[in-house]
Image 1 (tube, rainbow, N blue to C red):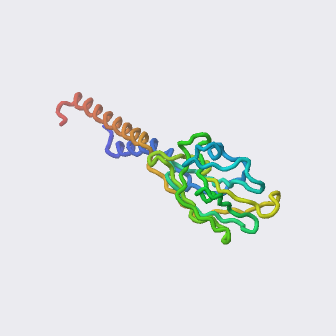
Image 2: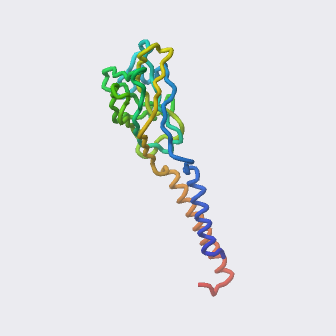
Image 3: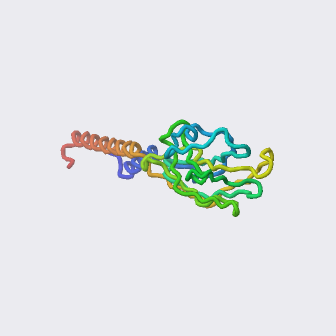
Length: 213
C-alpha cells in the first residue's frame, strides 16, 4: 500500500500539472508600441463605448500610440503613466470625453476583449499622461498574452517625418485574476481521481486480508 509520503507526492504532482501553465516567467510588462496612423475599425464605426468615433484618416501629423502588455495571464485591470518629449509631440484631446485615450481590443476584432478606460490625465506641459487605468468587462476571465491595452492620440510638433516622442512608461501596475473556474474543476477532478484510486487500493488490500480494519 502506498505510504503517506507517496500520496502527498502524487497530490503535489497533480496540482503542479494543473497549475503549471499559470506559472508566469515574470511579471507582465507594459511598454509603448509603434506609433500608427491606422485607426482600428471599432474606433470609426460607432461600436466603441458610447458610440464614440474618431476621424479616419487622421488629420496630418496625428497618430495613435499603442500601449502594449506582454506576459499577461487572466488580466483584470492595469495602470501606468506615459512619459513623452513635449518638445516633439503633444497629446491630443479631441473633446469627445475620452481625453484622447482609447481602450484597445486585446483580441483583434473581438469587442468582448475591449478594455474600458477608467482614468487618464494628459499634461502636455509636463510631458506625461498621468494615471492611465483600464479594466475588462468580465471579472472572472480576463485576457492573456501579448497585446495592446490602449491607444493614446498624439500630434507631432515638428515635421512628422522626424517625429520621435521618446515614449516611456513608469509606475505600471497590473491586477491578474485567480485561475479560471475550469482550471479549478480540473484540479478538483484530479484530486477526486487520486482519492478514488486510494479507496480502490484499500478495498483490494482488505479483500486479501479480511482482518485489516
